[in-house]
Image 1 (cartoon, rainbow, N blue to C red):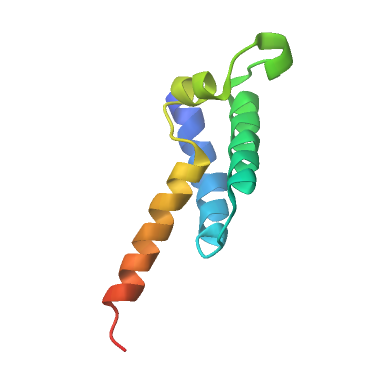
Image 2: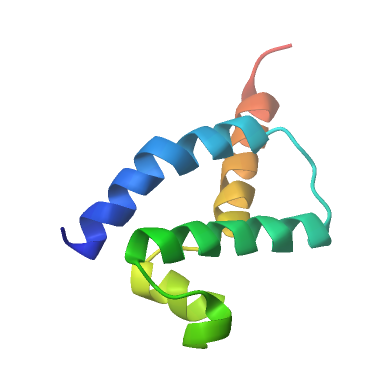
Length: 91
């Protein structure tokens, strides 16, 4: 199965629900880093990469290979979209 299809299915089935649940939460920087690490770990499993301590591939390389943005960036975009909806809604 092509990498693009694998990441598409993973994003559709898992990440979309995760982002939906976290769109109203305010996270500190350390939590955002942990979320990015978890996302990279999941992508390593989907892409069948070895763990980072064996393969020496950074999370940035994993995100680049999967052609996705870090989860913290995706979460921030989702939060801005939600803020825009709330700001434009009537009282």
